[in-house]
Structure formats: C-alpha cells, structure tokens
Length: 407
Ligand SMILES: *[C@@H]1O[C@H](CO)[C@@H](O)[C@H](O)[C@H]1NC(C)=O
Ligand SMILES: *[C@@H]1O[C@H](CO)[C@@H](O)[C@H](O)[C@H]1NC(C)=O
Ligand SMILES: *[C@@H]1O[C@H](CO)[C@@H](O)[C@H](O)[C@H]1NC(C)=O
Image 1 (cartoon, protein in one colour):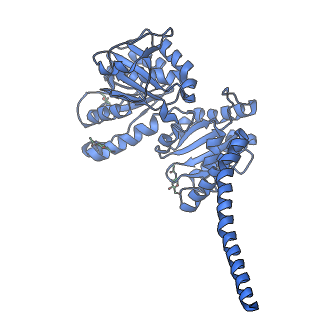
Image 2 (cartoon, protein in one colour; image 1 turned 135 degrees about the vertical axis):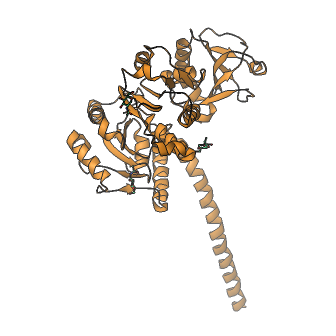
Image 3 (tube, rainbow, N blue to C red; image 1 turned 180 degrees about the vertical axis):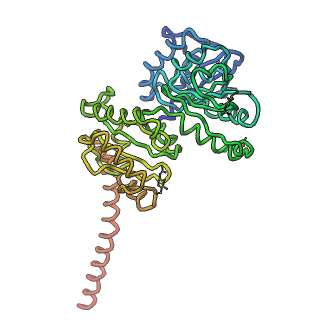
C-alpha cells in the first residue's frame, strides 16, 4: 500500500496549474518538458488513504521550502518517465522530508571554507560526517563514493584542519569524523587499510552505516533493517503510541530512563550498543513473537537476529539494573530468544498470522467472518459432497446387492 504514494525529487521545469496552497498541482504533461529547476513531487492517487494522510504534512513541507529554490508539487498519476530522480523512502515526517529535499538538491560533499562555519553546522545538524585534510588520496576518494551512497540519509562536508582545530582534535593526516549530538568520533583508518582499497571500502561503509543514527532514534519499519546492518546490539525501549502519538507517563519515564543511560555512557556504550525507542507495539510483538506489556525493554543481536528480554519487570528496573543486563548480553550469559532458524521462522509466521487475524477481527468482525467464512463454507461444502457422495453411492450399491440376494 505504501508503494502507492511515491515521492520523488525530480529535475523538471514547467508548472501546470497552481492550487491555492503552496503545493503546486501538476498535470501529467509537465513530464514531457524538462529543463532546469528542482522539484520535490508527491505522486498520489485520489482514492488512496495513505496519500490523504500525508496531505497536511506535504502542505507544511511546501511552506518550509517556499523561499528555497526547490518547488514542491503533487501529481495525480501513476506513471512517470522522469530524467533524473531520487525516490524518498524515509519517514513521513515534515522535517525529514524537508532535509531530504534540501540535501538532494546539492552536491553530496559540500566544502566548508569559512572559519565560523563549523559552529553553524553543529547548531543546524544533529548529525553529519566530515572530512578533514587534503582532498586527495584513497581516503578522500572513498569519502566521495560513500557520500554519494548515503546522501539520502545524512550530510557530508569537507574542510581544512584550520577550520576544526579549535573544535575537534584531528590527527595530522587526512581523517573522517562523524559529529553526533555534541560528540565527535573519528574513523580509525590505519596506514595498512589505506593501501587495501576493498578493505577500506567495506570498513568505511560499515562505519558510516553504523554511525549515521542518533543516540536514541525512533525505530520504525522503515529504518529497522538499516539498524540491523550496524552489527551492534539494538537496545529498544518499547512503548505504545496512540493515534495522536501520545504515550502514558509510565512509558515516558521508562523511555527517558533508557535514553539517559546512552546519553551518560555514550563514550563506552555507543560502539557496541545502538539505543532507540519504538512506538509500535505491533512491530515489537512481531520481533519478540510474544504479546509484550508496555513499557518493555528488548535487545536485538543484529548479526544473529536473536533477542533478549529482562527477567524482571522492566518498569521496576533502575539504570544500574539495565547496565548489568547489557553486560550479561555482551558477555553472552543472558537468556537468548528467537533468531532466524527455520522453526523460529515458522513460529513467527504463525504468530503474525494469528495477530493479523485478531486485529482484523477487532477492526471489522463481519468482513473477517466473510473473508474467512466464505472459503471455509465452500470448502466444507466440497468436503461434504465428496465424502457424502461416496457414502450415498456405497449405500446404493449395498442396497442393490441385497436386492440381488433376495432375488
Ligand atoms: C602533529 O603535528 C604536530 C606539529 O606539527 C606535532 O607536534 C604532533 O606530535 C603531531 N601529532 C601526531 C599525532 O603525529
Ligand atoms: C565498494 O563496495 C561496494 C559493495 O559493497 C561495491 O558495489 C563498490 O563498487 C565498491 N567500490 C569500490 C571503489 O571498490
Ligand atoms: C550476536 O551473537 C553472536 C553469536 O552468539 C555473537 O558472536 C555476537 O557477538 C553477538 N552480538 C552482536 C552485536 O552481533
């Protein structure tokens, strides 16, 4: 269903029809006319509920980008022959979409030249990657390649030693760092790595992918697979948001407590543990294959897909207890659940089928009864006619036989 709305950033020219909001309504003819100009376009179908839900957010995106050179538009159509486009796959949140559009309209790596720019970057970007030093050599080449690859997700800048010398403590040679919520971490490239192109490629790719998340992101269906590529333990505070994205006070306290742990201990924990929170109990249940109570604590092993849950009631856990639990997981002495073996997959399939059925039933019992009742009805009718026909035939034959004997 989500594929029905596709949001593309497209390089195009013409405007066909202007609606009263900041969002321009384009006809399908605009596709034939290409030229200069940057467009962020929502493709929608009028009957699609997902598209209607994004409508107000889209109006806000248009408002935020109104004074930029990016034009925000929507097109009521499903086919496209665009020349140069990028598809947006992220969260349907205003800020994420605005950042994405601004980023994709610029070169992947931007050069920072003014001395005070670093402070500005820190204020405006919660996370960005930087290259310090001479812009040549294997590390620089790899930086450009990966900036292109990860441009949809994050920002990349290049600068000289002079610009960062008061802010960071860069090594004398070229170096790559990530600035993340007031902390910076350097990519550890030893000299041997710089000579092995393939190893550098893989190591840098892994590092960027594992560092591009904040310390405590919201975990959803759209980013959980990227998080599983980090090869860290994923520590998740599970809460249950209602339709207005609200949670109870107990859940909020628990979530804040977990966030406090990673903020205080980020230096020691962040290389092994990626923290985050999840607002969808449904997603958490399908990972745990268990009807969790909220709030809950779930720790995923991203290489094996196993998960860990504390024995104690999570609500009663103190930060010290959580840290002890994480230590046990790291030392592989905590109980392990789930995984990716085939019995577990079968079990997960059954669990998801059951919960889907249960939520369908809660949503619309009549429809569910029809959807599953009708085929079942037909099936039993077929069974009935197959089995009973045999019995009837057999009885007739028997009757015939007895008549013969009597004769
Ligand atoms: C970097 O260079 C400075 C002087 O230019 C020197 O004092 C310092 O030891 C060097 N640091 C490293 C890690 O090589
Ligand atoms: C880096 O690795 C990726 C696969 O992970 C590959 O597609 C790409 O071509 C490699 N690039 C270089 C320059 O080796
Ligand atoms: C996951 O489990 C495997 C096997 O028990 C272990 O080797 C690995 O260190 C664990 N942790 C992570 C983060 O993958």
